[in-house]
Image 1: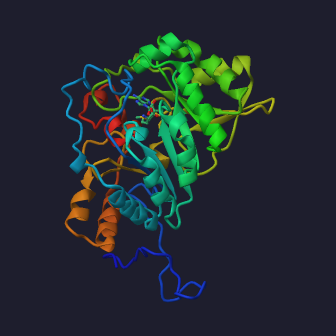
Image 2 (image 1 turned 45 degrees about the horizontal axis):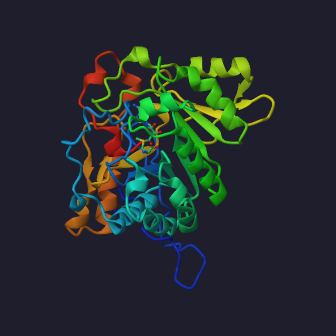
Image 3 (image 1 turned 120 degrees about the vertical axis):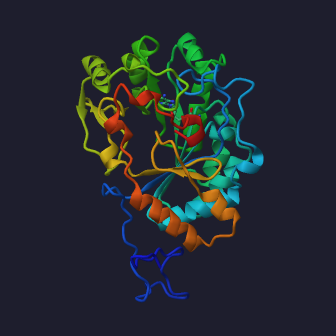
Length: 363
Ligand code: SAM
């Protein structure tokens, strides 16, 4: 029982042998923060490692040979991750996205997917990957219970893409991964493109057209000041409004209503009915007021904002033998105190504030 009398049931409220709800069990209340934002989504980073060195995320100068990644013992086991995910679901989370680093570099990831897919009440289980390993894993992930997948691909131009991933990785192999995912039934596939001025903004319309013709949804992401290593500058951000205008000039668009509160992407559909795109405008049109996301780092810290400086250590609670109820109570107290709204407050002063890296906390 929480201090103000609300109870988080950690198993479905059912009497054994009966399908009727137990009248003695309280109906769980919606857990909201100081800005009345419910806890709905959880992003789980399963590793801080990645085999790309995207210049906007893990620049080689900062994440080179000497970089100290998390040790294996620091990283949550699949059992620990699943236990925490179950507690988050009991506290209101309905959607879990697996991310990283690059989640597919975590060995046997499909075993974790199968464990998470078995959680009662989890409605949507998805994964973000740059797909370099996806062609080998797609079927196993689908069979394990993964619902759908988002792929990162910043350009269809090989030279531009290689400049951005900085490991000489060709576009073709990402496209092969997308095809493998489609064949495996991991649909709808979404494609994330981070747009950076002067680097790949001239590829926006080509990306939109290519994936529209294949029935896939591109989400154009404004380049963000995550972490402190990418040397972010406001004048390198291409505003989502410009992206939409450029596409609309060639393939007319109209806005769509959000599917649900807290949807990250603003959606548009092609007027000829041939599909849709999304734009994620965290810089020019911040959406903190509707942010329902918590993030769990690979070493078990809970973050309540992508731009946070400080996490809340759930791994210590797990490893010290806390009960599910005790961990749920801690989680509830963190969420209730949450007041983060970094993107609303972004200014010329904020990019230099110390922040966690996106490769650590998960995109
Ligand atoms: N490795 C996986 C991948 O590439 O999809 C998952 C992790 S990655 C951090 C998740 C997403 O964050 C990717 O779509 C990536 O392009 C995006 N991202 C990383 N750094 C970013 C930045 N500075 N601004 C905007 N998006 C960024």
